[in-house]
Length: 169
Image (cartoon, rainbow, N blue to C red):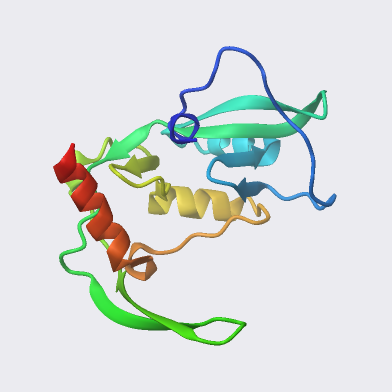
């Protein structure tokens, strides 16, 4: 999955099978970005950089769907100024889980490729510029939502695991 999200597409055509209902949207995220022709066209129309697209065939037919890869990059998220908070999650069968979370992050501008779509090191979360947010908002696409960097939340243990795996390699 991480090779696909970074735009490293195989040379052969990419195919998919429809397994869920018939509702159509302009973006779906299943660990990789699948976007509509309207999404791809909006990116091209506005001259947004850092995204590549490969057509998908669905159920053996050409479709209006594309696999989106992100070629822009930046260094790792900087959580040093993040807000730390506790979250309690209640399980449906009873019991609860309490965990530490961080809200917000920064990016070192010197590590950023300058693209409108980019992926940070160690995270497969697509980050976009404000220019891309406005452009895609103007396109009135469905199922496309953005979270400001100040509102991005991550479980603190994920960051610690990522840092540990970096030090192990």
